[in-house]
Image 1 (tube, rainbow, N blue to C red):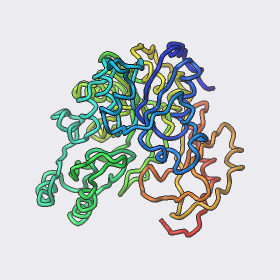
Image 2: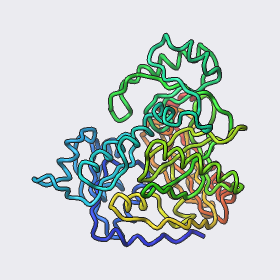
Image 3: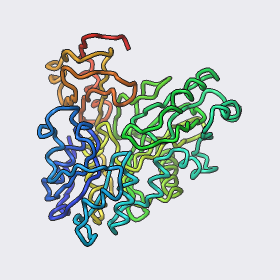
Length: 430
């Protein structure tokens, strides 16, 4: 049984500016829920095509915001001009972003306007993964790393970290560019590819550096939190299914993950201490952690709510929406998060096509919909190109289920996902 949504009447009469937004159903759902409770939402957007892929804007779920402003969302001054009057006073009660590429700018804008928000330096310390590693220092949950700024540094980095290791861009999202390397030849190939990335996926300049991290073996989870005035509240632990080597692409999640009390305490300590060390005292965070033979290791800390329907998992099980709680916090309200009570479990399966090409049709939709309790959320249509890159952007939809427990929910989403076949024309085996 789905937990009833908590009372969010504090939104009534408030106005929130969002600098961009995350894609897909959970975030348009959060928008609708907030508006139903009286929140007026302004959306500042740099490129509508990022959301619509050339389709009609008015048909897109995010178009239901109260006002849309087309503005350069990488320009702090441009953002401030939209949300202030002639005297420089804010026209909104809060300003936030859950887009990885805009969280730091939003934090800076909120600070300039005297609105609630996280310390911009804390957000940047999380977003730039090498800075996170430096901040964690000698903590046992940190991972040895080397930031490589030139090809000539590769032998010394390999000698220090050993193989296997993980190579990744220091500041990116959706698992873009993340891969395992097992020898010098693979390391050189990773450097050649990643060092050529001089713009983020949203256009911000990048230096072409490559972050190398010692590979740690273990099961990966994420911890969903909300930090209020320096106190971190824990919604719970989410499982993470990955395709695995050599790339690390998410393919499913369940919530909540049961842990022994002492193990959960050590995990929460590592996450809470991480946020303390980077100075993150305000806002949501999605922290990825791996359980190894020697304890928990922090993989990443993302100062935003999670993607891939994970907010829906949390909301349906706890009744608290991380999206709505984060927006309340941005408005200066104090969401009542604790005690967090789990009711049942939920699961999501991320759908990926088996072949590259142009989508011709989707077979098995009726069969997938017939699986009891499953909601199918597709975000591709015939004519769309599929598997352009092997990262989370290749996902074409979700099967989602809230059940009596997370295992039952996972069985249902897997059953529904197995019914679907994304048929492409001009197919190229991926």
